Length: 248
Image (cartoon, rainbow, N blue to C red; front, side, top):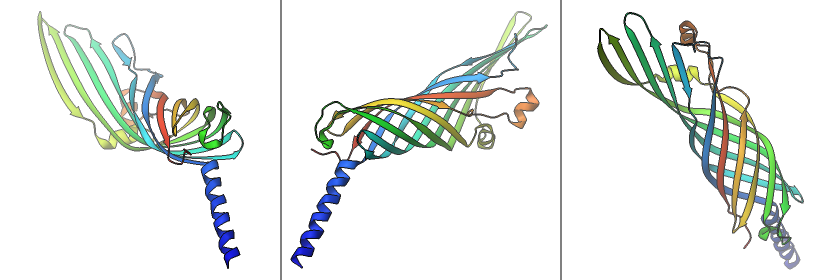
């Protein structure tokens, strides 16, 4: 019995030590920067211009990291990824009466993001695993599932006629049904990045994501209006993470 207990204790200690050495579980928080591009703006003409504005947001969640062999890591994350951006457009009609319409739109989308990646680490300290300071280079893919969306619009309508100018303004919240149809429910991206451990379980991460499909699609309303443009987005993220299993 004593030998069995000793064996169980030895195996448990080995497994625990292995988990400490080979696995990481932690949390991360960071900032998203959006790069926006409207493709195929067929409705853009001399009478209408659309201003492409970059945006931002936050990211937070957790990660699991496994090292199957020295300096090679496999990592999965589960994140709440927020994207916020603005769109501004101006339309001018010149005739006996000159009308100018300026529309300012603010969008807020929240995604469930699931990155999967392989990482190669360069050991900068040459000490045991828990004390190692790594420089990582990594790549992989990520799935973005749209959880919620919101859009608000502010419209300014100006009329110039017979030397007189009339200006009216209105604000509105866009319909959820239209936004759900307008945005793709799922996006897939490729990603590449670099990160570094700075000690005490803290890691600083910088990555860039290439979204393979657009954020928006042409809706029936847009087709009727003659707007066949789609919105493409890429994403840069800087984040700080903390490994709960780091070895003191």
